[in-house]
Length: 332
Image (cartoon, rainbow, N blue to C red; front, top):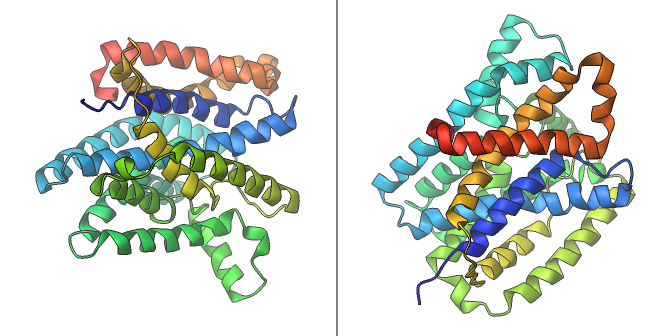
């Protein structure tokens, strides 16, 4: 029987909405605990899932030089098109935090493009492009096992952002602070993307989904462990941000295998879901910035309401996503 990936496509579709929830944090004021769970736990498994899925399907499709070239060109094109669209909104966002000289704009634009995007959610594409390229060329010389080890070491360093409060005073902390002054975060392709992309490639390379039974049991166990880790970090006040968790690594591994082994046969256009997930992810940032501008000073207070913030971003995002899917192929 031919394997379908409908569960993966459905998860991608759901994940796009989770990203909107992370960025609009609708429950933080009214129900703080639910807000923390949705935005800083459930929402934080989305990008690792995207990375694992990208690595899996890249490897599954036989990563020949021709496929690698075609795949990366597609990613770069998509990234550059959306980056250009977001430049005005990125400028508006930054102007709210600091005054920028032309020299700083030039340097900042280059740094943004190669590191975290011209708008904050575009970092994922820059990270994915870097991680795919790194893994592809690394495996030409070295083994998959060593790639996973390298990815894990880099990820552990990235976790210092979340576990910042346990770093002792000294030269290392000073050096890490200098790094954060320049790059703002460790959430990038080097410290975040490589591990999850290589995990996806590893799952595909040795057909792990066929070898691991009851992966959902392990996924539940590690999700509970992830919740304990997150609330522990919160209670101790260690984190600068909640981008990195140790437990998200095994959870992402077993959750992806669970989805691979889930055979959904609903009469639904899963391919369209997959396509919409990409468009929703890219386009929702427009309204995160645009809605407060349109509300102005008179009605800007409405955006302080979590529920209003969620739906004022969600509804136009869905409308624009439909338009892009059917009318603007360049953006999908």
